[in-house]
Image (cartoon, rainbow, N blue to C red; front, side):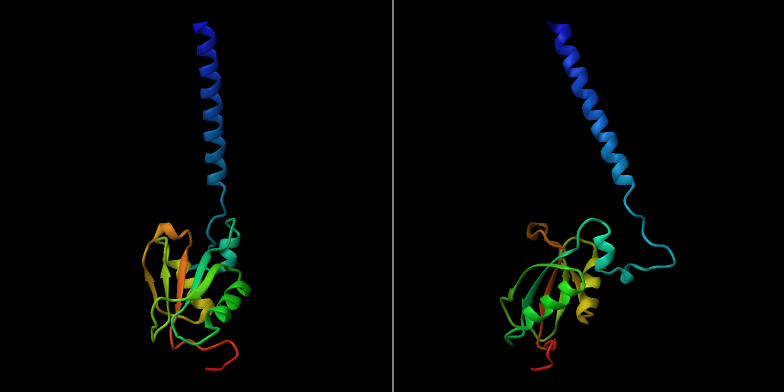
Length: 147
């Protein structure tokens, strides 16, 4: 009976080792960053799509003008980002900014570039399950050019 138990444990251990080896090989084979002097600032949404999924983003309207978050959501989705939430910010702000939520500021910079927002800060919050938060301020124009 003990020999049978040892064989079962040996088979389970072997399967675990094989699974680990396969996951390691697949992890190593992820696409390498593009060469040619590309800086982290040159990363765009399509680069993330090549890694399996687009960055998840939330858009908050802190300007107090109706429709801004919806307009920004449309622009981001058109650029390939996954906007998982849009709505109103808790407080109004004069200046638009993007928050990096994962410690990978190049993602937040790519989001900012898609919207013409240059202020990008890091405020890691892994409980949000997204890569960036956009807060639209009074300085952000509507897509239709109206104020």
